[in-house]
Image (cartoon, rainbow, N blue to C red; front, side):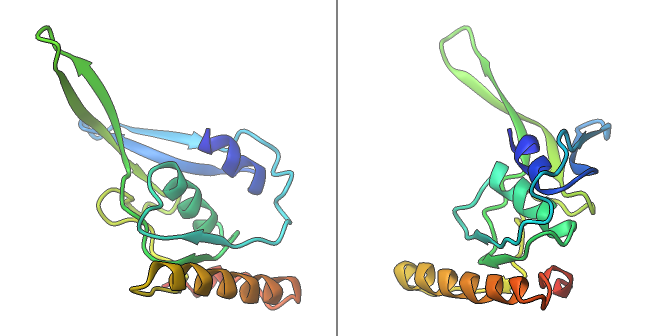
Length: 152
């Protein structure tokens, strides 16, 4: 699960929390030891990044663990369940919403990048994002920071 993935990159702490329709909060904390907590990294995201990838991006961003490069993510930050109906149909219910460790909602807003790289041409955007990722990662490795703290 995404909790396990985030747990590889942070030593301890909140990965996300969800709030249900009655306002009850459930915390989801790191389950690992952060075996790659010092591993230099960046995270690429765009409007097709959704759900678990947004949890990953939001958590790594909130911990200033990795700068997010690209475009704002999709904004699918809800917990859903499919209820089967007697007539063979189904009812898809949303019963909770996800929030980053710092309390930023994911649903409907997505995760904004630390470094925005967008283009109307998706192939050009992909190449530009990879180039910016390489440049940023080289800067991190050279000791010039992860740029995550540059987020407003």
